[in-house]
Image 1 (cartoon, one colour):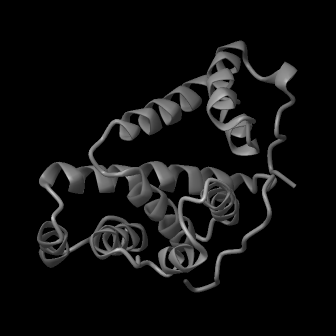
Image 2: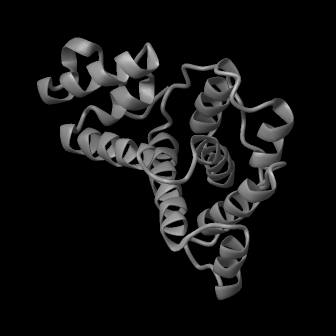
Length: 182
């Protein structure tokens, strides 16, 4: 059970309701995580704005999905792993072999592998990466802007993981448990 209640729509602040209408339009429903964040219209606006801005970036959507899976596993976020796995399977974006690789901090795609490994290290080491880690990204074909975007994707996923871990958000997707000690 969530540590703070997942609010019924009539109890969500009016400022958040308009933002959640956009979430419903995009996703077809409003998952519990968004409803929890909606307790704070400012936090919801910041989260959605950051996410929307990254959608316009140069890092492709599949790499962003892979990063989300890797970071959720690194942070032990059952909610985000469940939601993300459900989403990529439903949309046939990634197959089970790729999902497993991503959860292990890697990718079966050569270029994406560098980004997922970098993202996993960022999450596990709280940003303390080496010059060699950055150079590996560049050697894989990522520009300086791409590297900044990968870091930004880790940050937005880290926020979602922390919301769900701290508040124990009720999982409203088929449950996927993080591997302990991943």
